[in-house]
Image 1 (cartoon, one colour):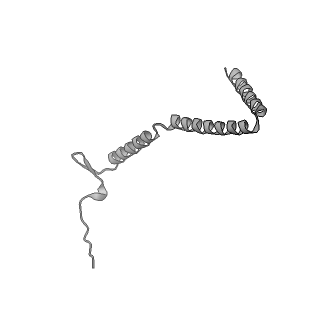
Image 2 (cartoon, rainbow, N blue to C red):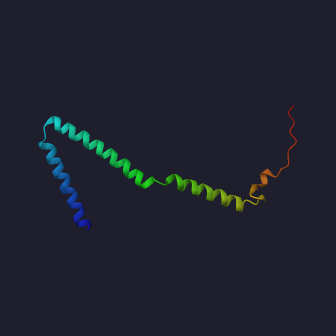
Image 3 (tube, rainbow, N blue to C red):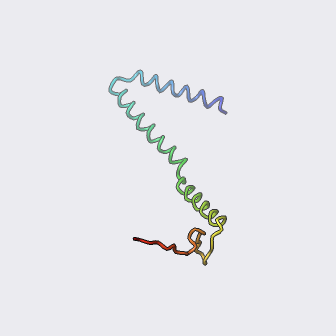
Length: 97
């Protein structure tokens, strides 16, 4: 399959470049601008295709990490509130002056 796709892409690219050589200066400039716009939009679409749920994945990983730390941390649970050992409720005597 790849043996046929790669040569077809090369032939198409060569034909586009040949067509570009046959165009006049103004049309070549318009063609180049259109190609740049098309390549920019194609790149944005490809990035969107691969990153459409990246925020969800990051949030899920952060939540799983927080849950793992809470389970393994050895703190205390008060209903659905978790208090790590470092927040054990004892207030240190702080002298302001």
